[in-house]
Image (cartoon, rainbow, N blue to C red; front, side, top):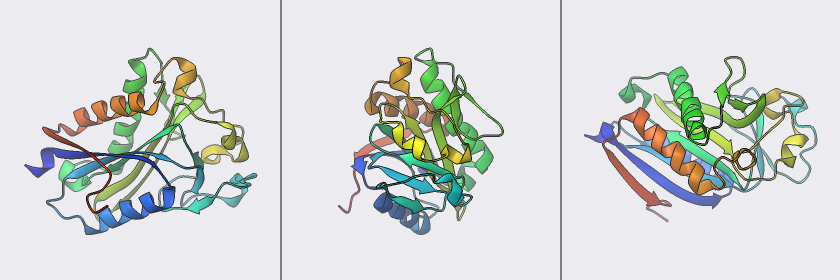
Length: 217
């Protein structure tokens, strides 16, 4: 049964724009028989500004590209050493709403970090996942045709200084933290493995197919 199959794509390091375009194309062309997919990717440095994003939260982007995107939320930074997990799910088939998917994403991060004895938590009024009042992961989703795309960004082992050039997710002075500093996952492989394991549990997937890249490349 296709609803119990999930495809995991390892995409390596990629520029943001082509991956965003591929997410949109996948969502626009998939049908009821398309398996859900999870994409693990690391991006080149970029600021992305969500639909609610305000220009004043871009303090000093400098030489880092700013891309206005169709996910919810404000402005955030993506760069090397940050694990992105994009969730391309048929929400109608899963019989869940976007709020439940947000909870799934938060819990995947929290459960992954709990295995390293890191007590992470979500906030009802500020989407994302936090450790000791510092933000360790950001969330952003878009739903089209009953299907989700975009997903989460977990800070693993990266240069956090570009976050100082913005008000992360619209919050001035928001302190950012990463898993490597907390004796959590030391690299993207460890982080991605944990996130995937916990998301597969949420999906009740019976068939998991792992692949690298895209078939037509």
